[in-house]
Image (tube, rainbow, N blue to C red):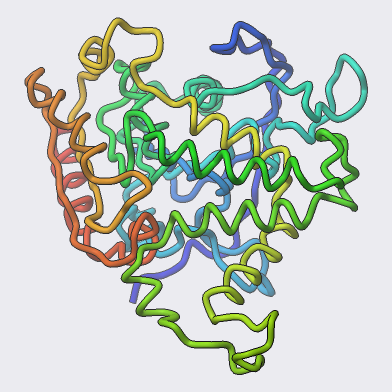
Length: 373
């Protein structure tokens, strides 16, 4: 039986810098929250960077204490004997800037005003998040990462690492990713934004932490959560079952899927900052790996390392054709690329729900990479 990494602690590091952002603005000083698992070897050649998705954090594995009810969000992947085997690899996960779990974001104190940034926080791109991560990797004394792996927004970060820091990564593993979100994905985020903007408690971003725009954020999360699922997964989990608590002809009676979305949204409000949700959604919308390049081909031509890509058959948020667009260009450029379309009924969340369907390929990829060291 594979073991856990045990009790872990989230650490943070401060950088007295002004980070130049894609928007032309600067952000600094910076704080980055991160966790590490395993031991960095003497040659510092076994470091793996795990990049989290939209509402994730640095707590990818283990527990923060013996009474911690839930382990890290990718605990099944990280630990002794697991896919990211901490007996072999030194695994790092950092919270992205713009988030609300210890790294500098909209709820952080603006050193120029002494008050929270709120909407004075600059608009970020995924590329800016990766620039901040590079500061952390340099701080840890690591010159080259064995791989960068992540799903969804994490896949975007992995791709940005390979394009902008090709000499500092030996491989990337993007999962359920895209080179640029579709108009539909942007439209869904637009609905989520409007749900928040229409909540009077939002106060144009100047809400008090103890009085967030709970209704707006819960609805925004529900919109996002629908996009992570699939028709088949909703049929399997909920079907057309009406809530046993309600009468079927009660005007406010709900189906089980409705109750689930309400429950999920309310829980989300308790753990996530509204402005961070908005800023990270904007970062997703703005993502385009070819930003600043003449074309997608010229951007991907910078990628020099091997990459292995995974897409999921029922994912309609970042549909397989979007992953294949990037993979096909890499193939045309004769880059060392491997692609797997995984059959799964669980939509965009497949990489979290059914990791066993793709992890053997990740293990083989990493073993081959390590053998070449």
